[in-house]
Amino acid sequence: QRLVLILRYIQSLSIAETAKALGWTESKVKTTQHRALKVLKTYMEESGVKEGVDDEKIRVER
Figure 1 (cartoon, rainbow, N blue to C red):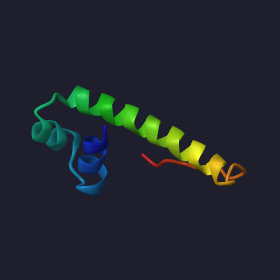
Figure 2: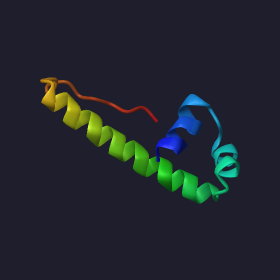
Figure 3: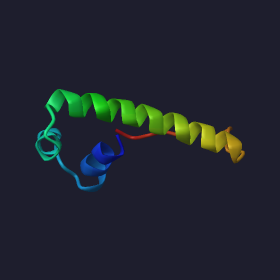
């Protein structure tokens, strides 16, 4: 999941380019990206609550 997010958002690769780089199907990249963003959002929300930022809404842009 981490690698997909790095390739997509830091390296700015397309779905097709990411799939080719990983040897995956585009469908698998999309599914993995979706799940990774969901996990990241949950982590950020939990982290915010632990640090006392629970009154702010944390958003993850897609």
